[in-house]
Structure formats: structure tokens, C-alpha cells
Length: 350
Ligand code: ATP
Ligand code: MG
Ligand code: FE
View 1 (cartoon, rainbow, N blue to C red):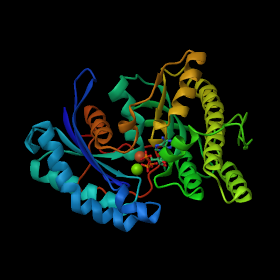
View 2 (view 1 turned 135 degrees about the vertical axis):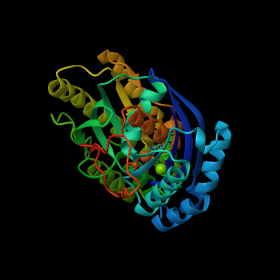
View 3 (view 1 turned 90 degrees about the vertical axis):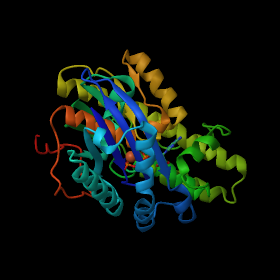
View 4 (view 1 turned 30 degrees about the horizontal axis):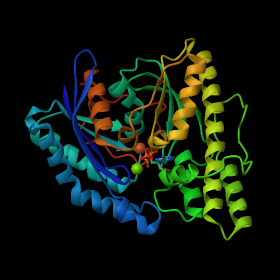
């Protein structure tokens, strides 16, 4: 199977071609990502209207590049996959409409992929992970622990009660006047800082349910920053390091809780701990999870950073996984701004 994948749910315009063999092995034939960071940077965050317009302007070129890089034409495709949500509705409409047009013109099936499902399945492309596995999904908009039982079968074990972890990184960066996007900046600052200078709270520690809460920690950082103002470079670095250390402690504790609940609910151990979403690019978090997995005797699978943040290859791959199970979608499908992964409604069978 050869699938074109399109991603336009947020601030990345992306397209990729991915192959899936009958044995389930994946191969990325092309992967073009055009980030809109420069367009949004002056506003300190993603502006939906600007994002939608930028997608309209460059999506055609991004798709043409992905097809050229893969050395194929539309008639070589088995299907056209696109992220039909969740996300900023203007962008989702652009991607879905384009995918429908290509599917119609090339007489190929359309596969509507849930953006979160694509993050969830990426580790099967990169690491060949088998079901069922425990997924820590940590991105700009989501923080969840999920049991991934099969394609289209995702059981949510825990979620954040307030901010997503990526969002907390971005907000901390903003309050410290670091450039957008904040996550990587906070990590860079943390390398120069003292993680023990501030004893920030570790919300939800030792709770049975594998849920998260980040707003108290975020507020604690704000109060400390206000108290110290004006901030020296060292203050900023220490605040970042202490914040990141708290996040790491919370993640490790919550993943442990997630592992326990996984075993209880599924009656079996996960084949692996998989981490996905943009925050998985964070080195301190990766290192801590590596240690946890070794201690727990569980395999850790973290896709490379460029496949953790938004990209077309994950959409193409999720599309190929769905297509291999006969799951395709009608051309009158509507875009979805909100689309929870649990439960993912099974769409029409081909
Ligand atoms: P969603 O997938 O929930 O719709 P999104 O697509 O915007 O949200 P991603 O693109 O997967 O999210 O990830 C972006 C987020 O990851 C941002 O919040 C960013 O700050 C965060 N992030 C990226 N790199 C790092 C890093 N090194 N450390 C911490 N956070 C990071
Ligand atoms: Mg993004
Ligand atoms: Fe994402």
C-alpha cells in the first residue's frame, strides 16, 4: 500500500508518502513539513486565521514536493489520507477539501485520520511496536495516557484536568519572555540552570488515577518569577530547570500509575511504553522515561523528534493502517474541530 498523508490541523503544513507492506512494515518515501512558526512568532502563539490562509497558500506546493520526492504520481497511490480533526477548523477544512479533490480526481479512496490516532500509531511505523501498548501522548493540545489495543481501539486511562504539558512549557516560556515556540527554549535554558533552586509543586503525585494537572505548577512558576523580577539570566535558567524537573517527576509518577491501570483494565502487560507528541522531543523527559522503562522491564519506544511533532508521515501511516483493515471514508465526510480518540467511531468499511 502506498498512501499520501496530509496534515493541516495546526501550524504545520505537511504532506508525505508512506508505504506499508502486507507484513505491516512501514517505509517513509517522502516527508515534507513546512512550519508556520515565522508567521505566528510575532503574536506569541498560533493565530487560527493566519494558519488557515497559510495552509491554502502552500499546501499544493507541499503535496507536489512530497509526490516528487517519492517519485510517484497520484495514480500510483492506494489512498489519500488526511487529518480530519481534531484541530483548528480552518486548517482542517483546507486539508480535507484538498484530500477529497485528489481522491475524487485520482479515483482513490479517502481515509480520514484522527490527528491523535496518527500520533498514537507512529511508533508502529518507526519501531514496529505490537498491540497492546501504553501510550503517553504529550503535545501542545493534549496530555493523555492511553491503552492502544488495535487500530481504532484506544482506551483513555488518564488525561490532564487543565493544561496540556506542551501548553505549560509554552506558557512558562511566555512569562519568562522566551521566544515562541516555548518548549525547546525552556529545555535549552534548563541546561544552564539549577533544578533544585526552586521546590515547585508536583501536582497529582501518588494519585491512583493516571491523571495530570499542570496549572498549579505553572502558577507557582509565575509567582516565583514575579517575586524575583527583574529576572537575571541565571534566574530564568533556574526557573526553567526547576520547572522541567517538576514536570519530569510528575510524568514518571503518572506513567507508573498508567502502567498499573493498564494491567488492571486489560489483564496483561503493555508490549511497550510509547511516547508521542511534540513534548517527546524533550531530552530530560526522554532520559527519565528511559530509566523508568529499564527499571520496569518495559520496552520504551520514542519516535525521532521530527516524527513526534506534527508531520505528514504519521497521517499517511495511520491512513495505511486503516486502509489495510478496510477502513475508508465517504467524500461527504465533515471536518471535526473536536474529535476525542476514545472511542474512535469506526467509519464505513470499504
Ligand atoms: P496536538 O497534537 O495536541 O493537536 P500540537 O500538534 O500543536 O498539539 P505538537 O506539534 O505535537 O502539538 O507539539 C508541539 C508542542 O510540543 C508545543 O507545546 C511545544 O512547546 C512542545 N515541545 C516541542 N519541543 C519541546 C521540547 N524540547 N521540550 C518541551 N516541549 C516541547
Ligand atoms: Mg505544532
Ligand atoms: Fe500534534
